[in-house]
Amino acid sequence: MAVEPVTDATAADLPALGIDIGGTKVAGGVVAPDGTVLATARRATPGSSVQETEDAIAAVVDVLARGHDGPLVGVGVGAAGWFDRTGDTVLFSPHLAWRHSALRKDLAARLQRPMWVGNDADAAAWAEYRYGAARGADLALMITLGTGIGGGIVMDGRLQRGSHGVAGEWGHMRVVPDGRLCACGNRGCWEQYASGTALGQTAREVARSSPAAAALLLERVDGDPDRLTGEHVATAAAEGDPLALELLAEVGAWLGQGIADLSAVLDPEVVVIGGGVSVLGEMVLGPARHRLERALPGRGFRPGPRVVAARLGAEAGIVGSADLVRRAVADGQG
Ligand SMILES: [Zn+2]
Image (cartoon, rainbow, N blue to C red; front, side, top):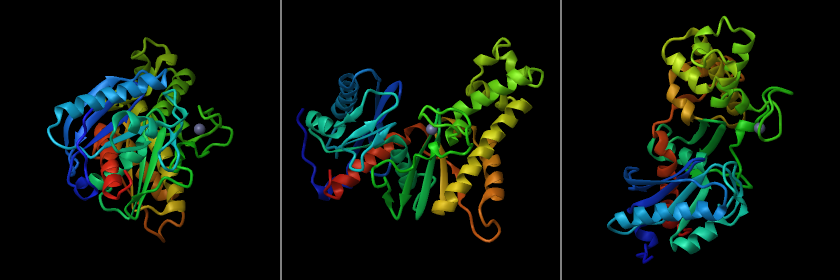
């Protein structure tokens, strides 16, 4: 693949490619310096082998690069998982076969382009800081609510990845001693109480113990409580089902409690809530703010963070990883 060289001096003004690797698809986009997505492409994610996943990334890059007229800065790649501080190595990825894989080096050799590689919630945090709900904040936290909880920290204009690259994994803070079992092997993790998965689990528990109260929810699954998911609860809540609204408020309260605890440690200016569950908006964020107000340590004597919905939606990972590679090249680190 012939690639036009991009100098550090011009990188900041050029489009870059951003790639977001999910459990089911590799989505990519050409992203302008102002955050506009100029073109997109996607492939299914074959998660079982490292080779096949990298083939899918290369295919998306190829389609986007061929369709784009002009130079591109490089390729930013965000994926669920733990990366070392440099982004050179994927330590672990829950949906994919990467285990201590030299992803950045492999992809840079194959694509012959500058690369940024890192966690998808970090990329989303950066996108919200640069173009979205956390624009210009001195200390912004991103909390992504989906199957689990992801997180990212932007402080003093830099993405903070921690000493070993795995900062912001607060989905695994223990909030309930000996509570629900988590996929990480521990019990009582925050994401077992404040995520899409948690919403489904709480709904199943309530439907089993109080089927009369859960009658409207149970109608959606032919009376079988085991089939209830977070999505059923979300749909029911949007239609005004009082129990579903109560379950969302409970998830919101757990969210607010966790934000209070994070505020005690980090004192953020703004906390941005993104990920699939965030489309529920005020049904979750309202109760989260209410709990935060009551649970913030030293309430009444100190300001707390603003809690706001993410603005960039499903494209945050693409936009953020593209800008992170652009910034790395402009800084001479690409
Ligand atoms: Zn956990």
